[in-house]
Length: 296
Image (cartoon, rainbow, N blue to C red; front, side, top):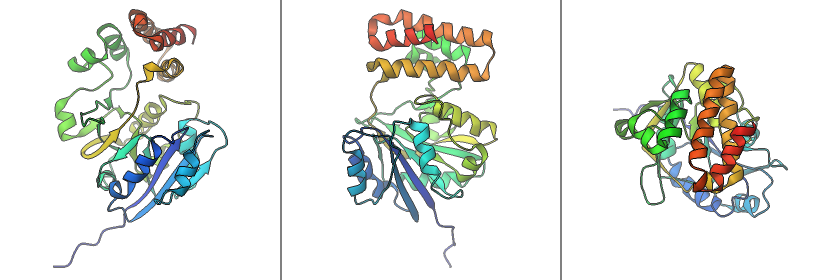
């Protein structure tokens, strides 16, 4: 019996770095096993004017990455756009944070999911360093999710199904569609790229993936969670950094305002003010988020 002939799997791996020397080697080391079974692989590292050894690490690593130096800290979306401008329009893309570690064979599993014409983006199961499941799936931001998270806290709101974070054991175990997922690792079908175009660079950091995935859903394609594909994420807590916390808050409100009227936006913003006021004593990140919500 003759073996079935399949089209070769072609994938561009896009990594955006900014002072990422501490974590980048581990990601690059994980790519050969993580991308096993990919026939044509193009690894692109876009550096946003790092002051550390990120560029040298990328250039000297045996994985053979192409390095694009932007010469400025242009943001995550701009970095992705700089990379995708150099690849063919019929190539699938795997966007990775530098603090991701791909588990063996995960890239191929995601690419095979993208062969379903209904799927625009495939995302894997994300684990912590200790191997615990990360709740990486999200609902579209709404007044309900915002007030639930503000008044109940994100953990309780997720548990009862009213918050932005999705905490559905069946979905995390079996897979399925979601509104959006954290942008640390996203496999993007070439047809989705063609349908929605570039990432919105006005979101310097945070909410850029919410915007991009909403546009893909609006084009008629789904965001599919594939638990058979796995990755480890070493990401930190944004609330520890007041600047990042304020930026995340500002972009959350900006994104919501794009899709809703002034009254709904005012209610959404008020939920953030109330929630961060309740948590001011927990750290400078919450106070920075409150200031951002009051001044935007």
